[in-house]
Structures are given as structure tokens and as C-alpha cells.
Image 1 (cartoon, one colour):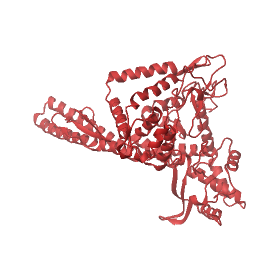
Image 2 (tube, rainbow, N blue to C red):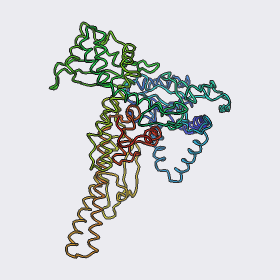
Image 3 (cartoon, rainbow, N blue to C red):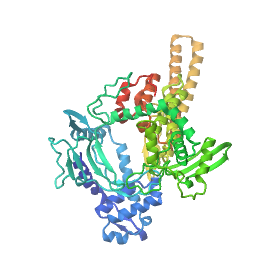
Image 4 (cartoon, rainbow, N blue to C red):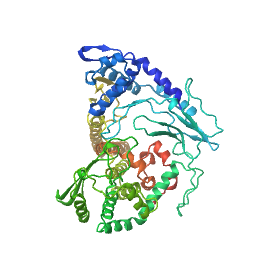
Length: 601
């Protein structure tokens, strides 16, 4: 736990913060107190982000910012719209650009410092084994963003102090010393939990943890053929992941029976049974959550399947050429909007009409059902069955089916990766894993497509100027020959190479000697190489465009059996690092070790 570093960052931040000024109405300029200045920098860093344009974000930020002001500052700063954060914002942009322009030596120095911190704080000893800790740095203060239209976005995430921290270690262990002048909130000796440190954050009131790295203590001895439970000395995340996906695989064996049962229940004489059956249909087919996933302290009007209200659905006997369409529109988990138009079976549609009879928009759609009743029924159907198991099952089976349909044997690696991302995207859409387009999306796409001014004789770009906000950055002598950056430039290079090849072939017909034949072969290879590079860039552009509003990471980390991905990579020769980054490879090390190319979910 790196409290020394956190406290030093806190102190150093004011070395530059006091240089800033905040411009107010009528042209006044004032210095801010250290606490108010620091919170102002949080807003300034996000000035170009969409969040700072949202009314609820600005309202929450200003309310919490005023709490950090002195009385004098409160009297002067009465409106956020009258404050100008441009100077602060420009400073941080300049800092970002300076980091990008660091020399290799400077980057190496930072890397060495980080490795030193990791060596000192990134490991613990468990049962006489030295184990890696996952996230040993406490999250710094900042502004809460949330997802969707979260009602608490913009609120101040306060600095975590030693007095907020609970340490968990064995009784005979040496307790880490808190920074001078501070003390820990509590020291526990609980060997029945897997966390090392915990604290409660101030926005949602939820408990945060520092835990072992996902790859720690993964000592599975799995008998793949018998698929028995792995043997290990402690139940850490790797085993929990394995158990989660094995539960979803058990559902595969009885899902047809469950589906037949809830179809029969649509005709039940008991309204409670009918409502339960329709809700289960939605959970199965649409991957809806049960409805009890609100975070502690959550105040937004978020709902799940069991808590849907009449106002959240609209019934269309016919819509866009389809019969029996249900239009959903509600806020789901994390205030992410769920909007979908879904054709359903006629019996489901008729039941929904029945459920909505004589009800007001604010009334519950499933008034005879709650999550407790539904979860008990799911447990009766299969031990360990929950709505999340249905999501995991449908997500994993969808990925496996999509990969079989989309992967072409003769595709190259970039095209296969695009096929994988498209399969993953089908899952993300099923699970409603949305995101706002990244603020740099348009710029990055433009950089892929737009052609810089190029000195065709030298193959080098002249000074290439682009803008970030009010900043201009000039990069001289970008070698587009050795490091292609954009599609148009690559197309031009390919056209040149094809002309050269055509000319070389003409020379070879005349000369008919070994030298000219060798030149032709060299030109052919150059054309082939450029064609592959162009295709890779075009695939990258397509992938970015298709994924700009879809979050692929959530399903990849939480709902997709990693053994499906590992098997696909091994079967088609796709390097696993092209799909999983280093952290993900560590998390799924158990799957990488055990799955072969013939694995079936």
C-alpha cells in the first residue's frame, strides 16, 4: 500500500496549482486556496469532455467545489458559468503533450521508478509464497463520472487517508506502518476473506478492496475429462471464474427443459406463474437483469426485469413489418438506457396485454413478482441458477456461435481479429454494454483517413501540424515510408509500388536476365506487403467505427468463457495477445493453460 506516494502527489500538486488563476465575471482574476484550487484542476482536466457540458455534472461539481472554498471564495464565486478554466486546461494539455514527447531515457527512468514501487509495494507473502498484489495504489481524488446519466456524476471523490483504511493480515505478520502523523482505521486478522485492504468510498458508500493479482495462487489441478472441481489451497478469483463458467455450462444441459417449462407456464391459470414465466423469457432471450442490482446508496430510477413498470414498455401488434413487437425504454444498471424493439411470441404479447390491463403508467408490470420469488424459482430449476448465469450462458454461447459463422479459414490475422470483435460485439449488444463515443474518436478516424502533405521524392512528410483544443503541435519529418500512419498515404504508396512492378515486368521482358527477374520478385513482394498493410489499416478503421458506441471489454471480462477465446486463437493461429492484454492474460491464465483448440462451451 503506497500511502507515501499518494501523500507526496497531494503535496506536489500545489507547487503548480498556485500559479493558476480563475477568471470570473467582469474580468476579475483571483488566486484560489489550495483545496479549492485542487478541485478546480479536476474540472479543468475534463474541460473538453462531454461530461462537463451535462447539467447534472456541473451542478454536482459546483456544489462540492463550494464546500472546499473559503468564505471569501464562496462570496465571489457564485456561478460556475462565470468561471473560466481555460488556463488550467491548457496547462494540463501541455503536460500531456510533454509526456508524449519524452525521450527514451526519460521514459526508461519513469519505468525504473515504477518498477521500484512495484517491488516495494506490489507483493505480499501468503502461506510462505510471495504473491503479486493487483491494485496496490489507492485511487486518487477526482470527479465521479458514473455511466449513462448517473445522478451523482460530477461529485467529488475525496482523498482516501490512512484513517479510512482497514488492513487485513495474519496475527503474526508485521503490520505496515502508516505515514508519520497518521494511523490506520483498523487492523483485522480475517483469513476467511481474500482482500488485503479495504475502505469505503464517499460517493456510493460502497466498499473498495485491494486484492491479490488474478493470477496469484492459481494452482488448479483440473481433470479436464471428468471436469471435477479444481483443487487449490484457497478460493481466489481464478477458481471463482472457473466455477462461474462451469455453472453456465451446466445450464446448457437443461436449458431446453427450462424453456419448455416457462412456455407451458404462459398458459397457467395462476397470474403469478404467468408473470414469472414471461419475466424468465425476457431474462433468457434479452439478457435482462433480474432487477436487484442497484449499488448501495443508488438513488437513480433504475430498474430490471422484475421491477419494470407499465410505462417502460409499449406494445405494437405490428411494427416495421413485424408482428407482436414490444418496445422497451428504461434505465438499467448504472443508469444506462435500455432501448429495444423486440418481436416476441404471440402468447407473450397477449400476456403482456393482460398484465397491463387497468394499470397506470407508474404501476408495476409484474405486480405478482419480485426478485426473491424469481430467484427461488431459478434455484428450484437448477442449483446455482441466477439471472446472471443466464446472461453468462447466452453471452458465451452467442460468442461461440458467432465465431463459427464469421471466421473464414483463408482470412489473414487482422481480418480474423475483426471477425472476433464482431462476434464480441454481438454479445455486447445482447447485454446492452454501451458507451459514449470516445472524445478523440473523430480525430483518430481523421488521422487514419486524411493524407498529410508528402514529399514524394523523399518519402517523408513535411511539417505535419494538428490541433488539440487551442494548442498546435508540429512534428517534423514523419517518415511515412517506415511507419505508415494513414490510409490515403498507404493507398498512394501502393499505387506507386504497382507502377514500379509494371515497369519492372516490362524491363524483364526486354532484358530477360537474372537481375531484372530478381527486381520483379522484389517489386512483387513490396506490392504484397503494402496490400497487407493497407488491409490492416482498413480493418482497423472498420473496427473503430463499428465499436465506437459499444463497450466490448465488459462482456469479455465478465460474461464470456475465456476458454472459447483461447480455443479459437489456438485453432486459427491468432496470437492470444492480439485478443487479451497483459492484465486479461493474467486473469485468464487458467483458461490459457487448460483449453485446447477443440474446446466447446
